[in-house]
Image 1 (cartoon, rainbow, N blue to C red):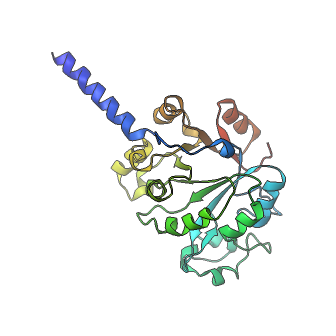
Image 2 (cartoon, rainbow, N blue to C red):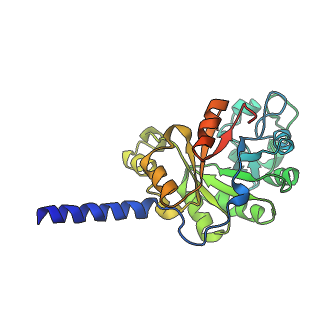
Image 3 (cartoon, rainbow, N blue to C red):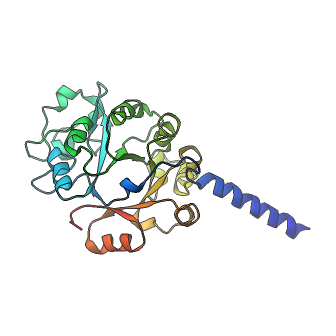
Length: 269
């Protein structure tokens, strides 16, 4: 009798686990046009700074998909930039969110004449020639950026999808823009990265937040691509997998040999 109860308990726990980590189950968007390798922040180098219009044009010329990052300015414009701080790329302190578009236009990227682009400007450069993978930056509960990003994406007619580490961003698109493919970004999370909460780190590391995000694909740090929750989604639910960030041809080939699409930089596959 005790053995039966234990077996039932284990079955119940397994069902709960699968329910929590499963991706979107019905009405999945088509992913065919999005199944490409992506140049991380564009195809950048010393001449073309990362997340610049020239780096994106360079990626288009070479036929690579484009991965980019978006922030929301003080005056609610969607701009393409990676870091939380302006210091590394623009040589000044502060954040995108603390400045208006006009103020940010006075800055230059990486010692070049390139400016921080609007997402609409990137869309004009790409013009549907290659797929675009948009990472939504931000870890707070505030998903305001999604309210401004979604209408910009509505007007673009090329292949585009979103990804985020923040399940609340994906939850917004699940509710208000279900036609866009959405991906969960996953890496190993330390409790220090989430305000010291060991519980939150535990939940994020095991993808239990999929219950609110219900992603269409996973975008996973290559070091943890074989963790159980990733393998469950891949081989049971047939969830597409992207791996990041390959910085050598060896890393690139490993990802491709395992059936994943690869987000890469500093190489030209």
